[in-house]
Image 1 (tube, rainbow, N blue to C red):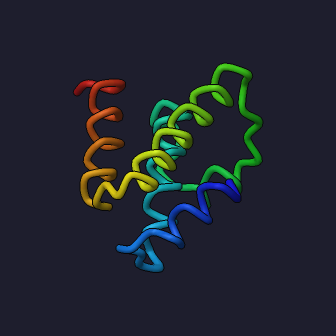
Image 2: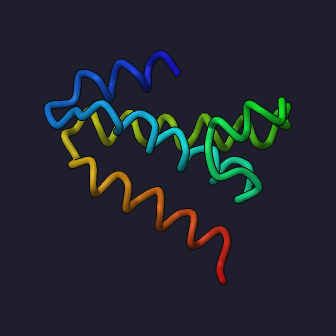
Length: 90
């Protein structure tokens, strides 16, 4: 997560709330929607499975790469939201 923090904070379009929004979306993707925010996830003291850890790493690495190549925050949010919608269809 330190790499993600550095990537977000060094982004040209950095805003203080970007980190929380991205982390909350990563939690939702990793836990298949069971938790809506990092805060609720931490409050429950959930332990990620090996598969969930791999999913989290994959999405985190993707976000870092997108930030590194200069993709706008709203496009990264859209990427994660689209992945969430694909993963949990209504």
